[in-house]
Length: 108
Image (cartoon, rainbow, N blue to C red; front, top):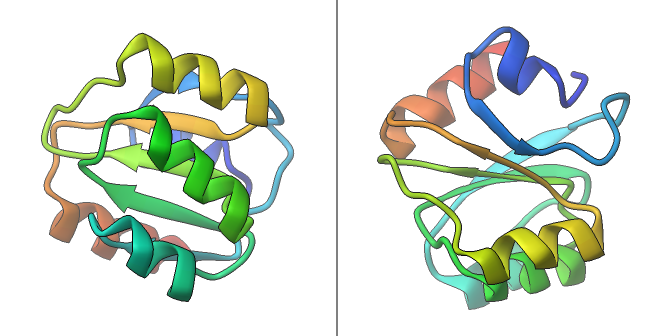
């Protein structure tokens, strides 16, 4: 799916979108960043509540293209800057991780 579908079809708030044509091929839900590094699929989207710059660094290591922050979490300025620097798309939503995981799974 195109990364823009996270906003267009699912209604998540776009915070940063470096490449609207980027393809998301999978998803991974975790708040434990060492777990994300070890198990997240390259080309995927991370579904988490971890709203800090280390999350973006882990995305870079794992080859993730986007992050969806759940439960109304908002990124701090460090996370926003890291997303811009590393080219990782950033979204937020009031929905839970469970709901977001199910929604993304349905459209993949």
